[in-house]
Length: 447
Image (tube, rainbow, N blue to C red):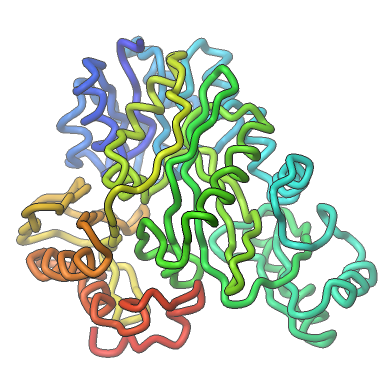
């Protein structure tokens, strides 16, 4: 087992990793930018090293500085958390070269799954259901238009290097396809330096369902059921739940088996998710694979009583997984609390927290790195806390979440708490009848 782990991340996920390491008797090293000097992950780690100024490219994305910090502190492993360098094949490869264990996917696995077109081809070869579309990148417009007509509208153009909804266009006819092709290429080129596109059938009334998987170094993979991540705004998740209101035991088994098959095909090591789109008929299609821990991993932990961070560390150290597939025993919901103003287009709201009261009680978990007097910097992702509640039924979960949110006091900044409270009373959400497009026409006024 590792003696010391450097955490190449910040905020709540860094603190989450520190907690598990302490329980495992493993020393921790926090790295931080000058903007994060007062963050709790810096205060609670055994050691802390400043790796640069506030901009991410000069600190949390600076591979030489992170490796230097690991060498100076004699860390024998690095946990990347999520975001930043967690799915960076170069970082994983550099860790290998310096004899430091990267607690995550190998460079080969990240390369195989990081490019959407390559990932789709890999999953098709493994027999995992995929959305009909082009065989990888499609370069010629006339060829793309011909394929769109063959598949049948609506279709979606996607940037192969895309993310966060950029470089994506839905096309309903020939005219919108021509405009979508030009717009998607221009946006993708500007955002990613790569304007390559691929084409898929557009799945109508989709649900975003992901399957949590864990694989070890010996070729064994298991799944820990699903998470429903359909409540999104501009392709950014706002809340997640498990089990999904639309997933039957039979569909869960099929999707779990498909996820295991996909992960096993690349001999996947570590925690990860296979993400699917599920249509109104119960058909499911591979969307992408995340080769890292997810923001929403706590809800899976709560319903399966399984520490995913501990499993990541054990797998990286060469410990075999149990190989047992897990079924949810309870219901859980996570609300992401962001420093944003939901009544003003979710505009970022950094600043000093003047007063803070965290909710508690049975079945309530808070993952956060903030405290009264803490100043939220404007340089990073706006998520400042996650409220996770667990109960015996979905109805109880919604009641408990509303109660917990009403107890949550954060003064000095705007947050998404009012949005989440309103969602708990939303008829469509309460009935489990929503898609990834649910919030497009939702009323955010008065929040």
